[in-house]
Image 1 (cartoon, rainbow, N blue to C red):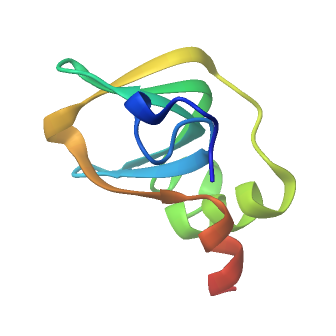
Image 2 (tube, rainbow, N blue to C red):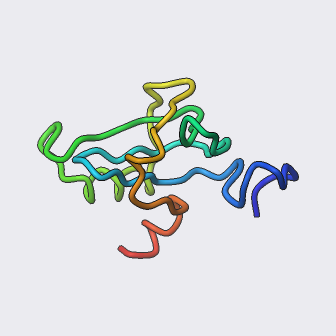
Length: 94
């Protein structure tokens, strides 16, 4: 449902997963999408194989326990974004 900022997109205020065209995934609170890219607040990121975990394992853990933020505000270039979806959908896949 998000917050009452209809001009910021359907995911505004929701914790989302951003899959990229590269080996990284990001988890954070969706703020908005601008010309520069997608803006996440209080975000974390993971690269396939980092800390011995796959991206899927990282997302399963994030869905269960949340994430420890690495970035207060993160801008992901539009061309790098492959897919965006609510983090809650990860828990539904388990």
